[in-house]
Amino acid sequence: MNTTDPVLKEMYDAFQKLDTNRKKVKFLKDHKDSGIYKSYDIKWDNLIKTWSSKDPLAYWKPTVKVEDENENKEGTKDTIDN
Image (tube, rainbow, N blue to C red):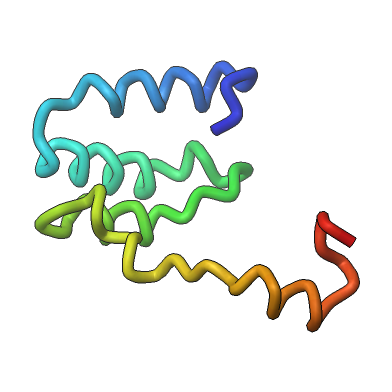
């Protein structure tokens, strides 16, 4: 998150104060519909989907893939290690 942008910081702080996932989903939907943040690249639908799930913090774990380090070194020349 860009903490130097006061608009995003204010939105983030307000979101963090919400105590239920239902309130967080409503907050996200309201902000998406407002159109205030059109100049920002915010993936509203992904956020709404995540916070609507039963366990939002675990929602993304199955989608994260870790590359095999040796395979990455052999297959590309643009790794940090090269």
